[in-house]
Image 1 (cartoon, one colour):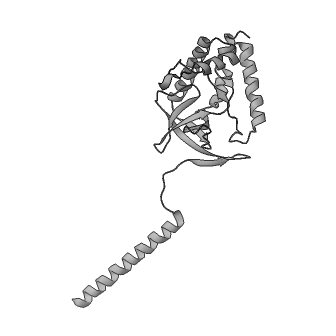
Image 2 (cartoon, helix red, strand yellow):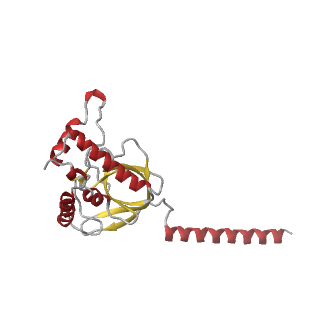
Image 3 (cartoon, one colour):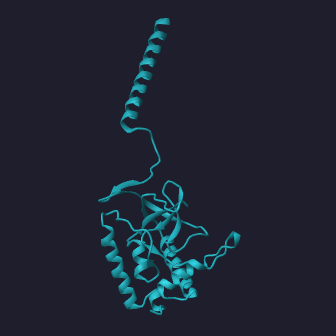
Length: 217
């Protein structure tokens, strides 16, 4: 009986050692399990982190060119579009007596609009962008740059079927080409991208779409 017990104990020890060895080799091969952050793609000059299957996250600060996104891993981040600035969608007052009226006036002057007209264009930009994103999932590509240290990260955002959102805003005359540029994830350089957007803007002006249909210019 004692000999049989020792044999069973020896067999169990061999099994346990074998299982431990398999686990160890597997960990060396695959590494520790991590939640996916996104797949990285590289352009000619820099790298972007790409997230597919993103969803719009409702938030009172969502606007025509800046909005909150729920990433596939559950995180919620705020992103701001490269290249474009949509007018503010409402007149707002803040604590301490500050307002956004000066910014709205600046946007209005550059678009050739009254302040009220600029806000109306901002509302239309907000409705278009948030309505588009709310219809389904979309892709976010970002380098996590945060120039204003306010946790608003610049990004390229592509709804299913495209095109990039900044294209849509410029084509519809709902934003000015006025904010940080960047090489596109596919390698398109800033100068080439600016030419593309300026052509879309010229077409919008000729067709009097959006702000250009109200502009005094």
